[in-house]
Image 1 (cartoon, helix red, strand yellow):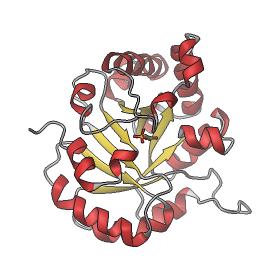
Image 2 (spheres, helix red, strand yellow; image 1 turned 135 degrees about the vertical axis):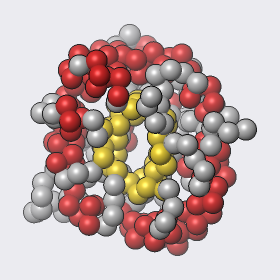
Image 3 (cartoon, helix red, strand yellow; image 1 turned 135 degrees about the horizontal axis):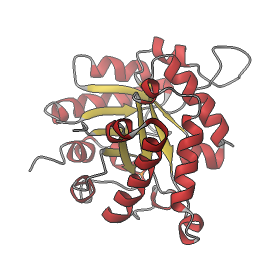
Image 4 (cartoon, helix red, strand yellow; image 1 turned 120 degrees about the vertical axis):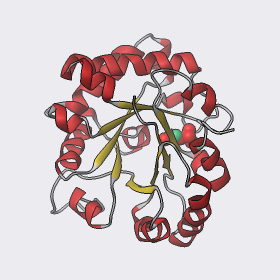
Length: 251
Ligand code: PGA
């Protein structure tokens, strides 16, 4: 059985004071969660979140990482820097990075390798846009994105990976993939992992759905056999909403 993982992606939101307030409010609400709980936050909030989450089941994540150990890369952060701040998880290849910051499948792969080598747990994002879905390319595209991102990773390294399937047309739009659509595409990703590393690895890897997941639709999505969790944007910015998503298995 795969343990579910619900991760918030705060994107470019929350000052350190706001971050501290959110995590302080969240802590008691998610303390009995059956799933892994992660908040991926802006780097300026690492210290505040780490302090506020102390002694709780809330794990700290980052929203990106550079592939180099150090050097002349203005504005970037290395995996060792994240580790030193107590970061455990890192989102890589989010569609907003691909769309607005020139992220490619190749640079995603470099970031994944560097993160995994440093001992970070990666949340790798893949997903098609509206035109690609309408043209019937969804399966081929998510398979390609997944396999390039995993290039050079051993089976053991890949076991530290979580994949987030995020249809770009469903992010921040209020549109969600239907439960069945999400389940089917996640099944395609799982098969691609199984072809590369074997059936056991395919069965073991956790694959989240992301894209307008919220307290209302979480139960239906999580009831699907292939879906192991969620990457939550908008609904992760308010403690009551995020806690309802995290506690999807409770009444
Ligand atoms: P959303 O964002 O939940 O606001 O759609 C999800 C994401 O981009 O990770």
